[in-house]
Image (cartoon, rainbow, N blue to C red):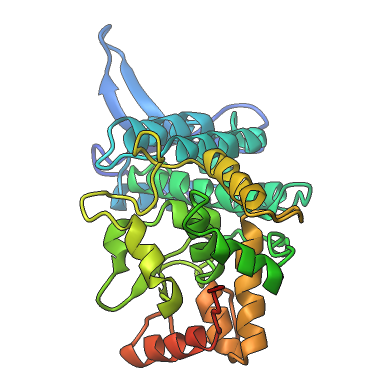
Length: 358
């Protein structure tokens, strides 16, 4: 073979052609050569490269793991719509209206990526969106979740070689922990009216479990045990997901009120027994606060803040508090719950003294 001349490749394995003229990337890799309807050869362009060595490597990698080259031209928006259709329009399970709305909102925040080929998007491009600290931490979580799912879908269908979304992270501190805890007097008012003001029991359940409102509204009945007296759920961070919270003996009767074995969700809309949306619950919550004679302006998140304050005041250790509310902790090395873990959490919860008015 003459020196400098490339070895002939086996038929069907693709070709490398050096394009004429002065080009930064003159070596074009062509694959899937075929004869078109007019009898002329047609092919897909895998890419153009600056050197023959780079082109050889790309073609060798392609032949090891062939894929549909045309898919590599799909934009982020095109892949998003394909993923959205599979997840929401032909689902194996149903999703709430709020879940779909959050997904669409997160997609809009990714506008800088919409028209770009997803195969050319890198971690830095996605990270630039998450570094916009004008967004709330919760919104960043929705965006991160969307990027992970869309890129996983793209990898699954050979649209991309590598999932760069695995390298992105939220750099903004969690910003939903501020709140005004209920005073002892306000807790007494809630207990005093638990049987007369509708949905007061749900406010007390939030207060003595520490669930975020979204976590409680999406809590499945199957994840509540009336024998072990535990609730399992959680969203947001890895530490917050799939956590177990023992049900305080003082609110077990309140949990039983809403527990319906035949219902998928623990809490449902009192008017139609459908999933209770966050805005709808906020209306019920404010009606409870007003109906119980509490004048301080509270939000459902104040219940969670009250829970941590009650635990701290009762002397619960920091590790148990972190685990109960789903906060990341350097002291937490295990993500699974043993029987001993649950009993330690139960002891921490029971430290809270509930003294309903007579």
